[in-house]
Length: 254
Image (cartoon, rainbow, N blue to C red; front, top):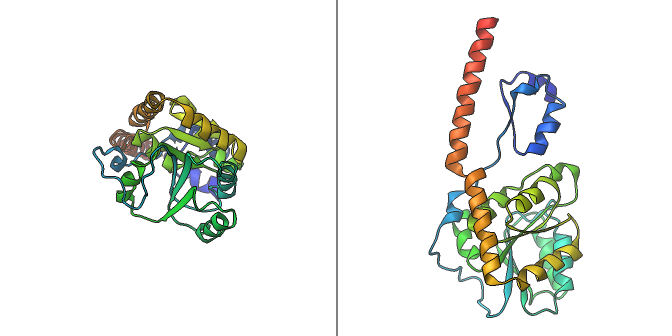
């Protein structure tokens, strides 16, 4: 079925470069395959934001913010294992903003593990509110389970995190990890590596403010160059024109 669809498309777009190889296995004419990533929402590049009042302000605390879907793919068990290993370090706090099918489990686990003081479950908010939560963050967390398909994916939040201009801590493999490393926007450990995540958080917290600021700048610069909305909309428009011209040529030759 996949091959049937690809062979009847003028162009086929892949969300990551790793996906291009996978697409090619089912596409008779690989010349029609193009790389087209997701874009970063402009809302995350706002400045002069008012901090979200839902987050208690604590001096001398390093805040790691996770924002987005709370599901199986995000490997929250490994995230909580990292948080639990650092629960006696009062200078590390985890802020989780979002909702999903694992939300109930997450709340129960936070209570069972006695993490109420270090893991704050803030709930779900509209995307327009998210930048006000980012103001509280010293680092932004992205995680994905160890899975061959996930390793080919660039999670949408990576683009948004980069555009926010804050350093990233990633617990994931493949394309997502490569983006963080190529942009020099943060630290990465392997998917499912709770110990590696805890170490990365401690390493990030030990960095100078200037170094963390530079990581954030690196990320935003990379996002603007690779994932800017206007840039990608222009590229998509060009792809539509290309597809239209190729279709016309096919009709003429037919």
